[in-house]
Image (spheres, rainbow, N blue to C red):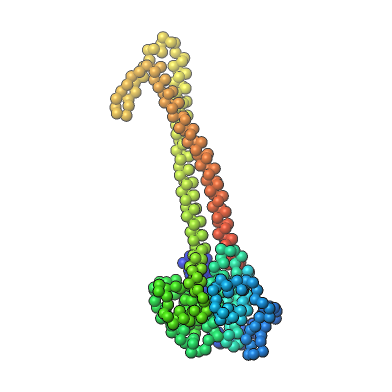
Length: 377
């Protein structure tokens, strides 16, 4: 059984994981599974009398044809794709693909290739997330599984040649290239699967400067009329979820910084308003004291102030009060303007918070579309 998994919800992992089991060791078990599928699938496929090769009992569904078109498949590859009776499903395909037995924390399957009892009689199941932004994943999954089907129908000699060629091409990639980790997670220590994994991964995800070796390009040209476009789709969608999460985190950080700046400005404005109110209260108290004096006595009072430069100035109490009133009146418009700006800033922050909440819900919805049944808590 060849299983194709989605990218785990951690940006440190690659965008696709494929789990393969010992295919030829499980032909009998898989054939029983396929028989059960055939009973329930009905119109999807029938078995021809000429050795068990699958044939369509009806024209391929539109979504299957569309994937063949988008995958730039040659006639040979298109027939391989159709012969594998691909099921394109917008729900979890765990039940159809089975369980790998590798642990409950493994992500759900994104696609799988189920080898048949004889070569070239396998079946493909592809999960098609109900979100158009993930359409690139669906295409990569489909073409990945198609290459497994193509590899499966080759003879031992052809497979051995491909294995050797793919190993050479893999060696051209940097040691830290993400596809290396993807391949290792897919092989899971079962070396007989390494060749088909290299074939499927390199064929759908890798485009080297100057291309692969001529013989490798010749082999892939049997299946794709424009393999570069298929790789391009993968490259465009490879970091989709990680990029969306990063965008959310960037916006969240910006909003938190904006909120903190608003809180700081509000604290300063409140302090300035409190100080101004205190100064007004003190002025009113001094003015009341001044007004309570007899006019003749008022003229006897003077006030000496010392400036920041140490210079002392002495003026009448009346002039001193007048200067203080002018200063207090001059400060008030600035405080009032800042208070009004804070009201606007808080309203704008609420709008941006609402937008951020909507972005979060969108990211969650996309993850739920990519991983049916995922727990986002």
